[in-house]
Image (cartoon, rainbow, N blue to C red; front, side):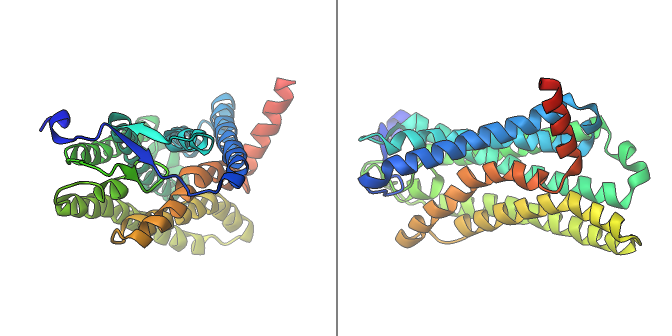
Length: 309
């Protein structure tokens, strides 16, 4: 079905966050600073892990990919949201809306698979330290990363195609601050039961399956942590996992809360608050959580600052 023949809507109006005029400038500055923090912190992670040869390990290879992914993920939504705080007309074209859905779910799908890969990497590092570099070779790391991006690409493409084929006859006000599947389904002038089932099945399967694999990895990690006799060794092993575990908890908790519930007027309002977490806050927090207890990153950062001077 051709998109032009299936819809009379050529653009959508984004409802935004419903911020009163008196607070728009404050929200504009707050999210602008948060976005700049996201860019600066994730770029720093990328630059430091590339420039320092001691950080050319699988763990930091995946962390570097996550940092790049977080920059892209946040950039899909946050810049448009920031501009809309000071705009009278929060418009987005039909094709722009579909692209936002595509890249949002593409990068979100990539991230959850990458989290799974990173949990497996931590398991190998703790359970098989002597064979770690052999098991997690560069080819394996590259293959696992490409697999994450391919799965994410397919995930985003499915939702984009299925949503773009729906007829939208008006109204065209999206009750969200960006284009997402659930708010758009409420605007379609046709039966969307297939799309709802697809959202629950595809996104639900991806989220639950990757979460189960992460849990399994941490169960085995816990098994080997018990075998570590020294408290210092156990503490060091835990420090390499704590950041990842915290990020996973935040991301999965928010995603399951958003997409595993039925779509109602009340839930859509709650979804907007939840979406802020994984669109704006989590990408900014990830570098902090990963480096908070990471002595290698801190050491490399200090070294980088000395060289820069």
